[in-house]
Length: 286
Image (cartoon, rainbow, N blue to C red; front, top):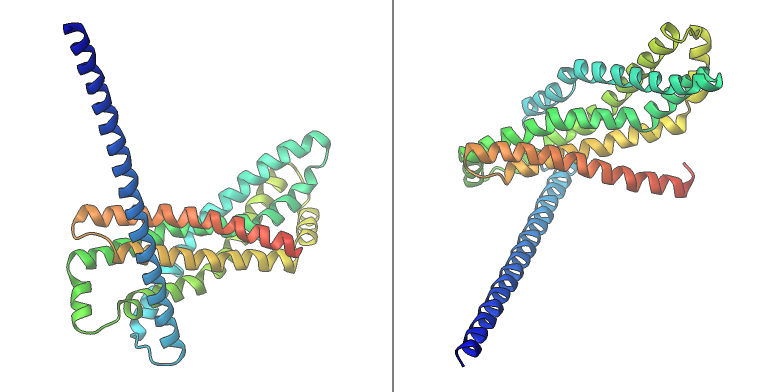
């Protein structure tokens, strides 16, 4: 009789443990679902706010100080030229070295010029520029606006009736949309120069022949595809940086976390956008 009661008690303990585990799993799933729901709703609200701000700007009812525009352009454009040029040159150099080392086995190292040109113009220049700007500018957007949120400056703007999208998002978004294609073009040129340095100096390809193959590989179609990628990446970086800055917490740790999330989200969404754009262009034959 005692053994039977002991067995029953052990079964009850096991059932209670399984029940507690199931409750914990359901609670975790429910908590995740609620967080996803609130994140999606907040993102849609932010996108709607930005869309209304763009419409007000188009119709001439938006009010943004001219100095904010120039400061945003200066931070995105001239100050990013050096780092974009350096990284793009090195990427072109590495791409040419790896490609030429393999093509040399078949005696076709001359085609490294076409390889570097097409890869840089079509996607690599825009992608590397986007990654650089996400780590440099996107994080700065999130940190700057997040610091304003921590100092209750955003609350003060709301009390004074100043639209945070008009004042904070629009200048940064416009600066990224305008400057990213220019920086992408600069990255393309520097990557081609890096490939030329490897092809001419290390693999003894004549400069005239290298440039001839490069020009033959270039085309307006590939050029516009790369520029379009740059515009899309600029929109993604600006929106992610501003979004995580506006919705960051009220302490210093939250500002740092917002900057990290802005960079990670920008890179992830750039990869996702690249997949969609590549698929669409492949279907359209571009």
